[in-house]
Length: 272
Ligand code: GRG
Image 1 (tube, rainbow, N blue to C red):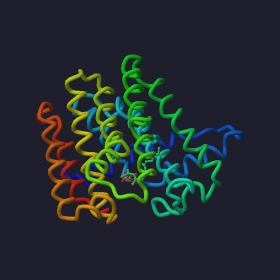
Image 2 (cartoon, protein in one colour):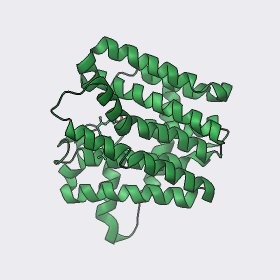
Image 3 (cartoon, rainbow, N blue to C red):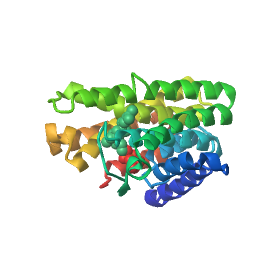
């Protein structure tokens, strides 16, 4: 399989679906949709929705089963980036090569665009999944992004901003801030396919290891946290070991998870 081409195709499908969810013909809502579209449709690797889709497929579901869930997860990711860029957090002027949401729409509208993406994501899950799957998906996603997930990780990250972090702290923060949403993405894909608990759990392990490796690679590329604290060589070794663990978590899916295995190997070698 040509992984690059495959990912490109998936990205196009995700972008098309996101565009549809993020449109309203009513004049009154023009500003908020404009701000949301600006940030969500600004490119990005779409790795989380791709994990949702491939997890669904590995569990016997279709792209159609996966797409609402895939878009919901990407909306949550986009919200976290919009808020992370705010002056009160990372205070970034650029994201994905263009001015950040608050630079273009003002701080209040950027906060609100991020805010609006959360209920929209949950609403999509509630309306477009079968009731039992929707309840499981909303439960998992809200766990992943709340106080003991992404928000909790961000709070700790801010607390430790100018302090030295030991290995355990660094891993804990990364787990909450980054890997937990990867874990949820892979699990949500299995839930969207109607998989049983064993498969949902296996996908969760895959997502968690994948996300942890992904964050370390991010740090190598940004010369940041993990790579800065422990050196590029250890960071490289650890990211490889974690991606191996991710791939090993897929054993119970047999050949059905071959695409996920190839995607994991591909992202281990990413350069941006
Ligand atoms: C505001 C609650 C709240 C949380 C923010 C996501 C986040 C937490 C902070 C952003 C900073 C950062 C580097 C987080 C680690 C997660 C990560 C690797 C984000 C970048 O994700 P990619 O590589 O980006 O998927 P694209 O642009 O490709 O979508």
